[in-house]
Length: 195
Image (cartoon, rainbow, N blue to C red; front, top):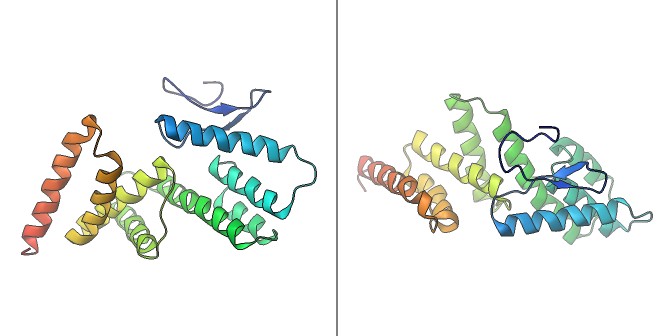
């Protein structure tokens, strides 16, 4: 509990002083390794005295990835950096996940209008080519697109979210019942539309 955990196992990245740097974005090995790499990059860059503009971009992207800054803080800092196109893209990709997660955290259980609005916003992001990178943002993004598709009774929108979820998590045996239920929901949406 001292470091914020309530479950077991509670995974975080910490520095040598025991300060929490961040948490893995997912529960799989690849997510843990990506997060560990981000945490190490953050420590290396944070402790470097004279950072180049590219390193400043890397540091900010790492801070975003570790959840050390808010969207507003990151956007403000981004404006003060001399970024090349690669640096802008790296920070924008990290910001996409942070924007998704900040909005999800603001939702209240049972707030169907807020959930539908978030799903609509995520669907618009999807249409604009923005995609989440981390597992937590990925799941929230596509689940809320599915909920938006249901609220609009639009099987095509629902299928966008379902296909992405199946592509990423469909191989997991523990997800089989979830996907069966979602396929049934998609079939019902299509039937209601006469498809």
